[in-house]
Length: 257
Image 1 (cartoon, rainbow, N blue to C red):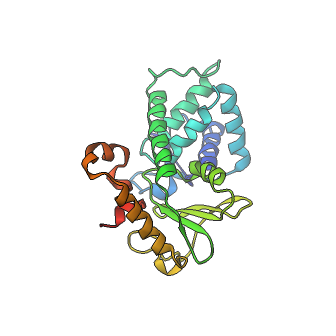
Image 2: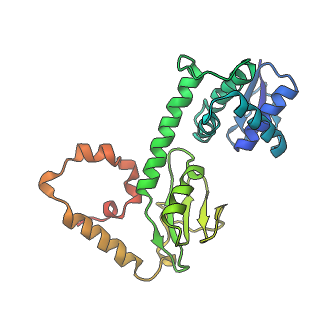
Image 3: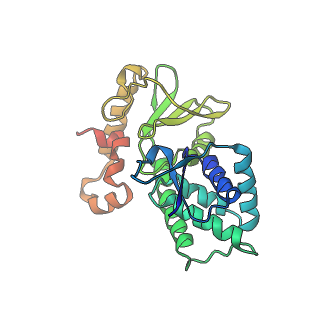
């Protein structure tokens, strides 16, 4: 029977848990996020308190035992929120620390292959967030956008928007996970809003939008439809590039003309 360890869902929390596993010499361990845990009949879980120093020690040791870039891939696995994410990450960490040499990336290893597959899914979602995020100007002169991606990609999309919109204040908020990124022209911060007041479809309430924003939104949608050549419409191809679940971010899809 495995020892069940619960952590706070952060990368630092996960690597603190790894530290505890090795310090307590736990041979069979299972790791779960605290907010996903449902108590079983015979469970005796242990909640791990995140300790940045312990986490850093594990991360530095792991980097020395693995090729460049693997720690970033492992981080994306943890942010995928998939059910097997912690098992995959734990298997890879154990393989790295038990190997006398640098960990070899061998896709015959089930966990290594799964890490690559999950990273591919994460990269696809990150790319789509780069492409489909639509900002709306608010009365506070902040360009705001809401998203609800399939995976927790907020930590991986900020750099793109910081470089692209360095001269504007902007906010990207994940309404599904209730946190987001705010850029104030100087630095980017991770924030959580209280009483944000999203409307039912997780869109920004029109009451906080700047004057003229609705007109710009309609104008963009009209331009999109006016430049569309009906005879060349290929909906099957269109859906391959813009899957239906992302249409909620696009003003040109929200209006019918």
